[in-house]
Image: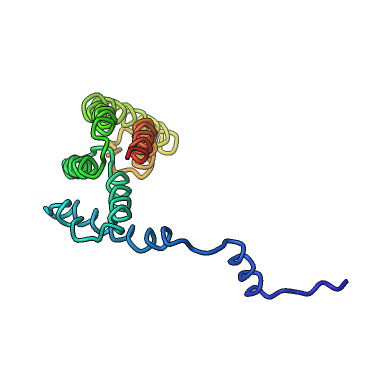
Length: 197
């Protein structure tokens, strides 16, 4: 039973030793990818020239800055729920295209992304309105029924269904289910964009 009990520090040090030395490549990535993330955030918020901003970095750092920038821009592609998001998507796509070398592959993925966005705005809006009205009628009928059971036949009280927490919760759930299909496809295309050089 000659086993010695190791401290947490000793265990951690053994794990670090097994990992091996940190490469120069990894160090550069850790240092410059966050710079790219900051650049992407500024690019989306301000009207700055990304290529001139990238020119401020040394050549050895540039690829890591670009990688960090691309990741943030791609992550920022969202369903165009409003004008702000539409503009942000357009700006992110412009930035991604600037940074990628294979413009044809990027444009092919963007055409698929645009189809999703167009469908979401056009047919999706109509579907959401129909689902909203249908849910409103359904919840109102259930509330009227519950009220009749509690109060009796006098229950022809007008209920503002849209303000009821039950309705709002169910609407969020329905909306989330409807958006899930779009989000799933969009995530596939984002992954595709990540792999393009």
